[in-house]
Image 1 (tube, rainbow, N blue to C red):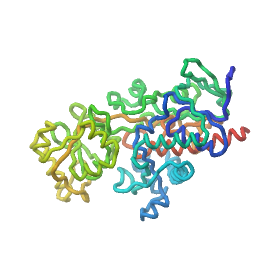
Image 2: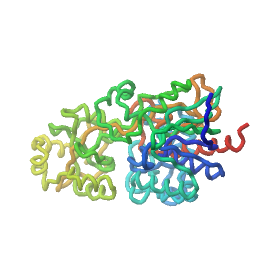
Image 3: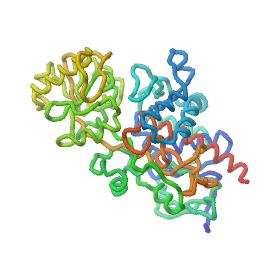
Image 4: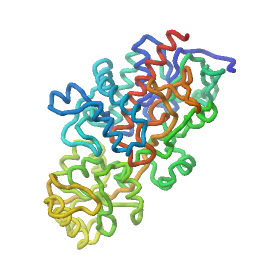
Length: 460
C-alpha cells in the first residue's frame, strides 16, 4: 500500500526513449496529462543509438512505387526469420499497425519519415523501411522530443525510478530519485514501462545470453534490467530472455557500426586468415556471434568503391571514415598489406566470390551472390567485431501492450513496450529482423499510450 504521495498524474511513463515518447504522444492525443520520468539528463534511450529505421507494410508510399507488400507478408517474414519461434498473432498485429504508426508519427506529430529505397534488408521480402533524412536514431529522437514538447508532455530528466507501488491488482504509483538525491512518490492511474532491456547488465547477460557475455556492449547504458527486477516483484510473466539484437559489424576499437547494406549489396567478411566463414547475408544480428568465434574476436568487412559510395549516405559510415576505421587499397595486394591479411588467401577469396556472383560456383555457406556486381578495385576494408546492441526478451504483453501476469491474466493498468517488453524476435539472435526493435518500440508505445489514456479517462 502506497502512502505519502507528493503529487499525481493520470499516466506515468518510465523512460523517455522511443517507446516512452510514443506512449506520451498517444496519450496526449486523447487529452490526458502524462509524466515521463527519465534517468538521463537528455531523452535518448536505445532509439538514439539505432539507425532510426521503422518498418511498415502496406503503405501508400509503397503502392505509389509499385512495391507489393502487406501486413500478412510482413508477418510471414517475421515467422520465417524466427523459424516460427515467436508469437505470430502478436507479430501480425504489429504488422497491421505498422503503416498507421508511421503515418501517425509523420502526419500528426511532424516526425520526418520517408520510405527508403535502394536495397532490401535481410529477411524482408519488400522495401518497407522508413527513416529520417539522415537515417539516424538521434534525429528520430530529436523529432519525437520536439513533438512531445509541442504536445505539452511533462518530462522530468535526471529522475530514476526506484520502486513501483502496487495495491491488490493495480499499480498505484512510483517512487523516484530526483537530481538532488531526494526520493519522491507520485501516484498514477496507469503506468507504462519504457525503460529499455538488460543488455547493459553484465550479470543478466551472462545468465540469459551466455554466448554474448564477452561481447562488446554497444547500447544505451540505461539498459539495466529494471523491468525484469520489477517483473519478479509483481509476478509478471517474462519470455525469450535469450533473444537479442547483435551486430556483426562494429568497427573494432572505434565503436561505430559498419551498416549491413554494404554486405547485402555484395560485400563480405573474412577472418584474419583471409577466409570467409559464414553466410554474412543471413542477418547482422546472428553474425555477431560468428564474428566473435573467429581468432581475436574480429573479422574484416571487404568491399569496393561502389559500395563505399553507397555507404556515404549513412551518418555512421561517415563517422567511421572520420575515425580512420576504413582502409583503402588500390588493389588486393595493397589492401592485404595495409590490413596485414595474407595476400594470397585474400586474393583467392575475392576470386571465389566473383565466381559466386557469376553463378559459376556454389557457396558452401549457402549465400546467393547472383545478381550482385563483382567487387572491383579500388578495394576497402574495415576491421569489425561482434557487438551486443540490445535485448529482445522481457515482460510478456498483449495486443494493447498490457503486461501479463505469470498466470496469463493482464494487469489492469500496467503496460510495457520496447526493450522492457518481450519482442517478436523469437528466442535467439537469428530471429531478429531489421527494424524489429523500432517496430515494437514505436507501435507498442502508441498502443500503450492509447490504452492507458482510456483507463485514465474512465478508470472503471
